[in-house]
Image 1 (cartoon, rainbow over the protein chains, first blue to last red):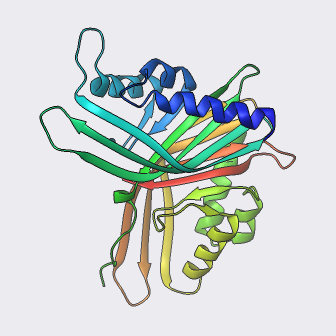
Image 2 (cartoon, rainbow over the protein chains, first blue to last red; image 1 turned 135 degrees about the vertical axis):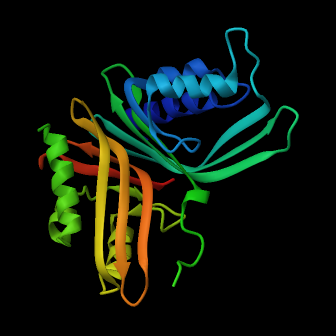
Length: 143
Length: 123
């Protein structure tokens, strides 16, 4: 693997660890470019970074507010990296597995893609999309 | 108009008039597509195969309508993200209407504004 691809993989791994209960939201948000656009599986709208940070804060807590989850993991599967100059694409499958406080387990599978840009010093995500499997066509269409 | 926005508008127009040659000409050979019709990612050949199925006379009418589009460009990398609606009428069956969030990544290459990462997400 060439150094740029390796650095993209490292940046991605650090960022997605921020989605885990053992990780830090700050690592994920640092990976997001200030101009980033996010399509998230919880919302039917495109989020900018500020709105996404707000949504993440709702789940993760902070500033004296407890998080809403006893445990949560974000697991990437079959990850592929593509480099086109200073553009990087990370895509794969994902599973979110978690346990909210005082409620049953949550399990959500889907595909994801991150469009990343090399700013000369680091890779940052300009776009993140989570496409949960529930939103894909899984049944016969009406006649 | 921003060059990426222009390229996206041209891509949309090509799709809606069924001009697949123009559509694929603006699509990078290493593109990746998440499409709501499939639980797996498409590469370009996989996406072409899927579109061949849809292009085989199974639709009376079809349109893809982006709306509330956001455009971001950083150097040679760009993204177009917003809402979109599919509306169509299949042969011998009723209408189809599907709303979603959609995102298309672009990277400037020797052919300006090539799409390199396509995402469609139904929501």
